[in-house]
Image (cartoon, rainbow, N blue to C red; front, side):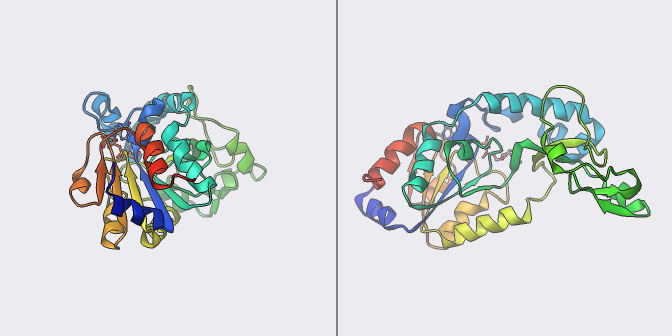
Length: 275
Ligand code: OAD
């Protein structure tokens, strides 16, 4: 599978990053986004379903689409690839997972050091209309959702546990129990920035790593897509695992063609046979 000299380098690595995209969860039954026939974006234009403008125009349609995806996520189980990554961390290696996935399957497999670049589908937050909140005389921060809210219309007794009790399920779009704002999944839509803490944590891990595995990512969406290239530029060993290699494969140290659930347990077994 790999050149012996490269295996020796990988084995000597002190800090490992596993950077994952939708292909990581494909074998768990969650569709990817850009595959020509089966990808989610082959069925619907993301601009109509995954932007703040789409939500403002038709919150129910955007909510209903995410409910569908949430059902797939709830039905999914971590696959052998997620488990192999978690096992490395549990064996004492310094592993950081940086994922674009919003399905929390890395957490469910037992990984603890996980940076969720694009958020978490099953967590909700409020859709804050900042213009309206600041137009009011005394905007405040809602105690339930942490969003800007109009002080006079906020319930002072609502707190975060009231919000946490609401789930992404079929039905009318729910509202924040504190300020009444519409709720939405806590994911990054097109046209929205990544959380500063998430991208900083990712840069930190990438800048310190000796090896980065890029697994199941098309590398089409920035700023996440630049992370493997950043690791390469910093001198880390970079290995791609993907049944359809990206342009990274021409520049990185090895490309392994195959599915994550099939390749990762075997690959890690070769690199770290005693773990
Ligand atoms: P894509 O759908 O763009 O790419 C999925 C990648 O997974 C492709 O390169 C496939 O070849 C590969 N793949 C398919 N099956 C695989 C398997 N079994 N094992 C390993 N790889 C496999 O998904 P992402 O790159 O994750 O953004 O897309 C990036 C972002 O675009 C997503 O996070 C999402 C989307 O819009 C947000 O939700 C904000």
